[in-house]
Amino acid sequence: MKPPYDITNRILMLYGQITESIGLCKSLLLVKPEARLRKQNRIKTIHSSLAIEGNTLDIEHVSALLENSRVIGPKRDIIEVQNAIKAYDKLSEFKPFSIKDFLKAHKLFMDGLVKSPGEFRSKQVGIMKGSEVQHIAPNFSLVPGLMNGLFDYIKADPDIDIIKSCVFHYEMEFIHPFEDGNGRMGRYWQTRLLMEVNPIFEFVPIEETIKKNQESYYKTLAEADSSGKSTVFIEFMLDAINRSLRNTIDESRPGNIDYKKRADFSLENLNDWFDRKEYMKINKGISSATASRDLKQLLKDRRIESSGTGRMTKYKKIV
Image 1 (spheres, rainbow, N blue to C red):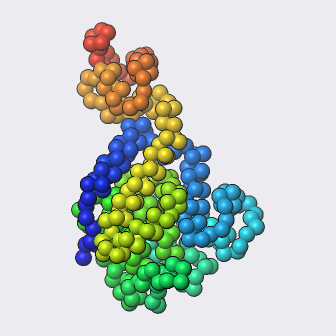
Image 2: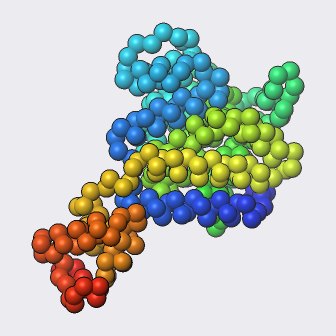
Image 3: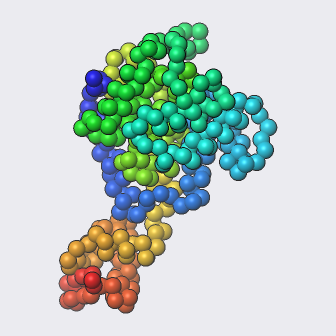
């Protein structure tokens, strides 16, 4: 069965903002941030996702462990970080629609922390908030069937992939398929699904945005449980994705993309004759002076030819 949710005006608005950001990534050749920012965002991701689950190590400890430096702290917390580093290093290798790979990822995260890492739970569980039971998960005997159905949904359903990634995150949390590690797995696998939309998401620290809005995160999970549909959680996650993506674009300083990358990208995507305005349009954010310099250099390098003069000048790739 398809998980229940509604497509609201807010969902459509947020989806539009995200696709606009993805379009900006494409036009600016931002497939992934520079090495410094990739490392920085990976540290933020690991620290935030584990902090949500109660890990006490700070971001400096996570950075040190990423460098294989010795850290003093609770043994379990250190193991959690070391395992998460291994899991995120393997992120791009996992097949997004493979339940076997999903279980392999859980094994990486929870190795040495639970009795049977990489296996679905074999007992009934409930989620506590303080002294109260907030959520009773489905019976353990139903977990394999529910998870197979959820993977069938994300693989075959025609709905928008970004929205389906949010639905997966919520439904996995609801099913609570593991004895422990469900929260970090929900966030991790949503990132893996988003990478199918655009590879930039491997290095977008959505978990940091969630951590900064942790109370709302849990509140929307509870509201979705009460309503019997994931709509409110989808809205929350789309907003988190959008803000995280915009921050990553800003921090990547895309205006510094060099001439060669701009030129190569333009000549791959501009067909027939084009003018300076069209060159600027495909290289969003550059000035008319930069565009003029690029075109002058392309002519000098004999990669394009020109026709006309002044504002009427047209250019064409030399094949």
